[in-house]
Amino acid sequence: MPYRFESAGYRRGGSTRTGRGARGSRGSRNLPMIPDRFVSVDALRGFDMFWIVGAAYLVSALERWTGSAVLSGIKAQLRHVEWEGFAFYDMIFPLFVFITGVSAVFSLRKNIDREGRRAAAIRILRRSAILFAIGLFYSGGFAGSAFVPPEGGDATARQLLAHVLDNTRLLGVLNRIALSYCASGFLYLILPVPLLLGAFAGLLVGYWGIMANYPMRDIALTRESLAQLSQDTGETNTMTLFRAATNRVTGKFGPGYNVANHFDFQYLPGKKYDGYYDPEGILSTLPAIATCLLGMLAGSLLLKEDMAPTVKTIILIVAGITLVAGGFVWGLSFPVVKKIWTSSFVCVAGGYSLILLAIFHQIVDVWAFEFWCRPLIWVGSNALAIYLGASLLNYRKVAERLVGGPISGHLGRTGEVLVAVAALLVMIAFARFLYRRQLFLRL
Image 1 (tube, one colour):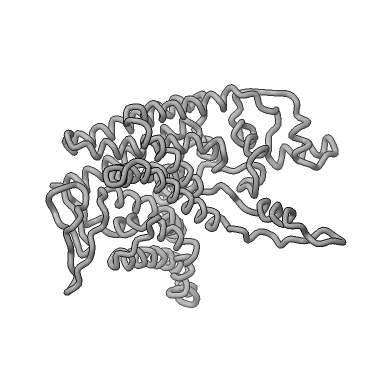
Image 2 (image 1 turned 90 degrees about the horizontal axis):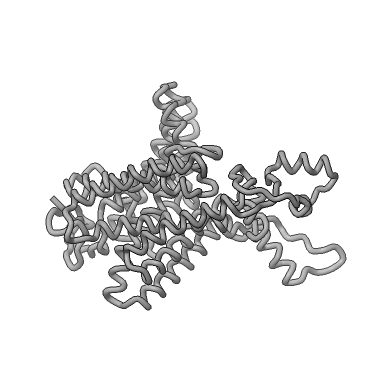
């Protein structure tokens, strides 16, 4: 049976979304309802965040404690593949972008109905700008190396600005989410849902066309390759070495040896995560927009009122399996690579995301079997606050203050597991505290 939940607990009946106007109570206090949303989506977002902020560390600690071969296999899935291939952990970031698209449909449809498309467009721009700014802060802000004025003179404002820009990472995880949400949000405003599917396919095919066919310089932007070139030529300036490579090639997808990485090296200002390029770079944002669009298509399906919920689950699973299979087949010619967000990677990660959404939707929304995922709901309904808290509060360091030092040190490997468990409990307690008091970080 579908259900809706309130801040003081869960109540069955009526709709797969939370309603407005109803109130829950805790003691004598009335608490406001949470805005309309599918609870399964919050739970799935919480599941995703669970792996981002501490579950991987817990698995590693348990594996070292027990020496279990099973846990060793799970631990291997909780590391990103170096380049080509796909592990469970490679799905975590695209799953979050996908869920952003699912949630955006709910909020944008409500904004359009209440205030019109112009107000919805302004909201998209405002939320994207704020999230982008938070992303700059999260990636280190302007805390780069100290500026040393030129010898024999004072620094000009232009020199100071250039130094700040050179030491600021402009594109990171939250920045990619902001750009993907902004672009897909505007596409949602101007295109009917069937054409969104066309936009999704167009972005993937277009990105593949650029990456496979655009002539690029025959040079790999890796430390090893550049060091060898420098030794052979005597030139130490990377840009000079890059421009000296006049031979052109196509269809290369190696580290630092592909169109996306070369484009970042030439045109992306600021500090780059991998030195010469960024895994959240300029061109690879295009298929990330497709990931968000896929979430919007899934969200639009969930909102269809003329379709049985279980039928929606089946459609999501079939679409997911099709995308996963198609992605791995496409990967034979356009490899599955997270660090350049290849089109085949979008299909594989997006397919698994659809399957996970289907499972959560069927269990939580359709069967109303929700008690097991309440901690996930606490985390998922305040994901941005929990994510920022992982950096600003550092749950593991808080846990070490509680059970670290002589306590965990005396217990050896068991103490490491104790710290890992405590870190997760600190995160869950923080999420529950915010949730029970209806404190939600909204943009």
